[in-house]
Length: 448
Ligand code: GLU
Image 1 (cartoon, rainbow, N blue to C red):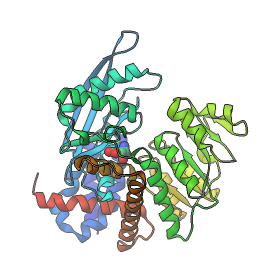
Image 2: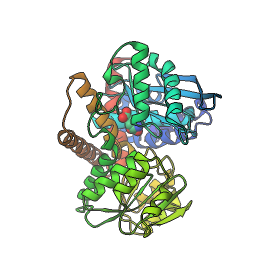
Image 3: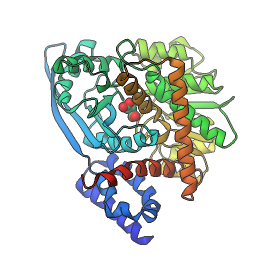
Image 4: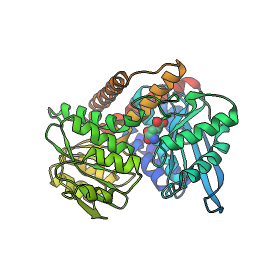
């Protein structure tokens, strides 16, 4: 036992040494490695083949200049990234994030998580991630288009339906995917539908893709609640964020009988005791691209808190759907004190390690992003399937598939956690399921 612990500790130290300053990447690696000690004991050949060390090193990393001209005629320069992390199970798959906080460490943490998340879905997709420090906030459609065209002018040579298939993430939605696809098509002279997912539904996009991450996290929480003989019925919920993931989590929670009483953006949060009005939320965020504070102009019985901490709002179910490390140890303590029994992560790594520990010690059902938000990328894989067969499935059929996938993910994580003597620990479950599914083909492929 101690020998394996030392081995894993050594691998982690090497990761820190080889990737200095990339704190989010270190954090993501640490959480996975901690789960893997019993796996190495049971399967010593993974250590012989140095599978963990290989998984921690991206297969390829591309960093490039993205020059473009803004509306005032000024030249702007951003930095573009694509980290192609692991292709043991299929072409690299993962979103693009456009946000000023993006640097290599963020893309690597996201790409690393994506390997395991994609494996957990059971679909044939490898892991990758990309993006830019471009800030779309306040930019015109023309500026966003010129940026996307410049970004794709470099990126296109690294993509392909059998090579690497990006999609959206923070700051990248249907508008951006449209501009990116248009430029890819123009540069390659190929209508290669499955090179990007999250496309518009009139040109090869899957129905339910837009809703998939939010619906999926809700289905996953529903499964966690069922496992403790409970349900969403009549429960107050808090969903942080107000982007694509948050909006459709609110929609599905309301359908399943829960009530979302708060959501947020990076400026502050709204509390609406009567329940968040979905139509208003969609109108403000999807159609008009406005801030969440404007919600109270339409609903005077709601309250806006500038700054503040959304996790102070009492709830039974918490769904962090904003960004990494948004829920810390103190927030987790507040949630537990207020009677929270389940947490499902719609965002990637939104809970800090201290927060996770608080939830697990308090026996809160805690669904890590790798499992709980895998519905988005799983539905991207369904989009690829439809593109490959030149077919288009109905909303109902696709949603049913998503529901089944989330049920299977929950079951695989639940059973694996039990098998490894950690019942109810979805972190261990997801990490071990994801790791072993990637490790097996890596062993089969030899040293590559
Ligand atoms: N960005 C999403 C995620 O974090 C979706 C990726 C995809 O659909 O490829 O999983």
